[in-house]
Length: 387
Image (cartoon, rainbow, N blue to C red; front, side, top):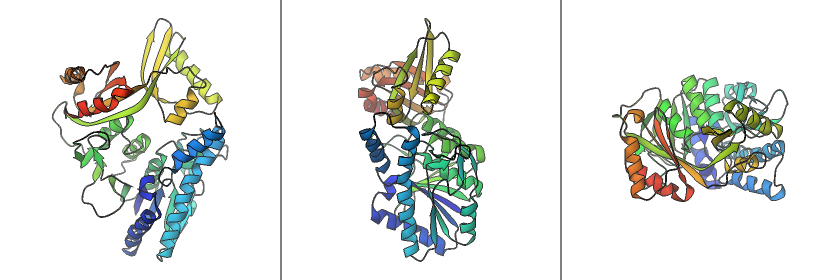
């Protein structure tokens, strides 16, 4: 069995949907059992977010999820129509119909169980099943939930794990993982093989190739991932599994970024009080916790460095104090960064370009600098030149 996930940019136009249907039809004719997970077409999710904020400055999170899930429903129905036209028996399901069970948190729900009774039945009949990614249902509240931006990746990995798929293909408009975003940095390298640990670090620090939680789930359940092109025949791809390619110490593998990071400063004495206050404030308005990147405690104040999708940060700023400074994080994922001259090399490279570093954060596999957003692209290029 093969699980394929198609990103929104690879489904943006009718001809692209026809191309996907052609590929899947060939697999079906070859006797493969295929389960598809699809994202919303093109920029549909962005357009729906913009639409929501055009009618409400603070959209109700339940209704926000109800709105956003319509994007994937459009994709799944159109792909299934195209497959049926090719004589390939196909049926589409929403996340709730597919048995994707989640917690009750809107905008960033986590999968708690998978009970794909209808999916199993249709696959058993030799049908291609097309699922709306990014969404599920809370069995407790019976409400529709979304898994957060990029959540279709999580749906695909969860289904691949349940059905013990031979592989989980993430098909996009790029031929795998590169050493940086080719749209921002020149001279990037294609990375044909990565370990789960390496990709986890890259996605945690902003790589958009896969949702962080999908890599986390794949690593936990040992699901081999393949990132490859959605259209045409291309030899290049990136395989992610347990094997770790050998790199010499401190060699930079890739450079990634969170474009918008914010300091949240609270007048509380310690981290316990800070986290409790943040959790209570966000739960009250059904907002997910942001991604925590760093913290600082001094003088009876706690500062937390956070990031989230733009619409979530905007909503958080209405209930918690976020600094207005425009900052970005830029991270070099590598090995051995903690015991090498890399920090000095990075500091020198950025000083040479007159880029001010507000903070440097270290981990076992990466080195992160926080810079002004206006310097982000130059910082990405400067660090990539050290690879």
